Image (cartoon, rainbow over all chains, first blue to last red; front, side, top):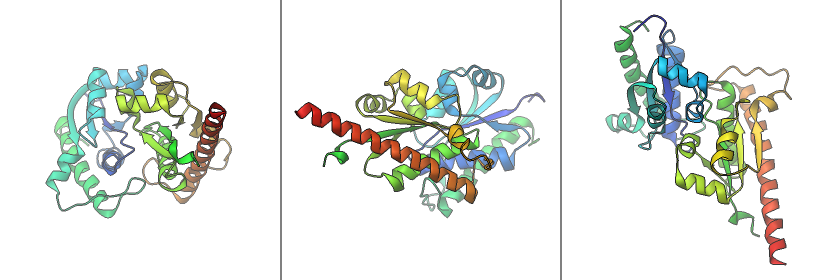
Length: 136
Length: 145
């Protein structure tokens, strides 16, 4: 990945479900703690509204979307805006691999929701490392 | 009492990038879960903007209140574009001006001060919900006479 590029992690807004909160929580875990040097996030609503600065950013940088539910708003919006989508994640897929976890809460996730968010963040961080050659 | 028959849609910006966006979402959830749970529903903004027919129809038939984190106003602009003028708008960065000593730092886990501010924003939204329902009732009454 070129030095001046930054991977853009775009979660769905998912305000109605715990799964949306998990996607956002995972995003902050990646951009603030796991891979702060080569990732950033942006507002999905800005992508959808066609904000020029945001559209330029998602076209010029690799993007990873994280969706809470199968409506896949983040993935579909980035695709529709011709963003450089390199990988998309779905919280429900991670949940399938951690069936013992029962996430709950939207304003505040329960402990199992936090565990799931961390597991998802680790998964995404691996992809970030693959793309950036382990320079996160 | 006809109040409960009407619902008010709260459309919050997604605002993942900035702390004000997190305040928008949490304030919206506080209204939905604690302050006015019987009178409100929320609409997922990107789904709404990306063509969610159910969401758009709801916002055409029922009053909406948009909650934006910043002056870009994605929730307000989107609602106006696809469903009509919102009944009221709340902009977190404007409410923040009333609290000059507060600086928002977190977009993930809110501090006690930030959470208190989210509660303040939620109260402003709830006041607008009451006003929207009052207007609906007045309108219904005048249509009956």
